[in-house]
Length: 73
Image 1 (tube, rainbow, N blue to C red):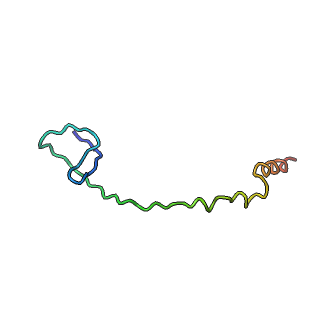
Image 2: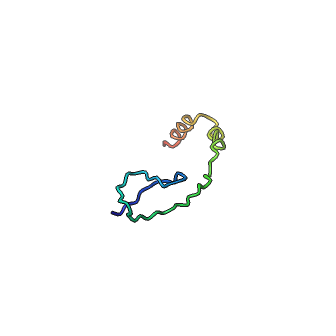
Image 3: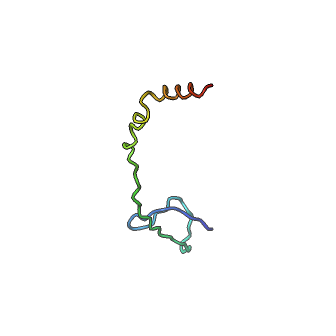
């Protein structure tokens, strides 16, 4: 049998997330993942709030209506 099973170390033993039938003395390979959490780059959404007001002096729907009215010949 060849299987990859996810698990974790609880401080004293390795705990597998799935039940696997193992025989006493059965050979296993354990891979230790050194996964340090990376600091996630957070986007400050507050800097984008209100940009529509700066771009449009009127309501956005009104602005679109004017654009459509002006493109007709």
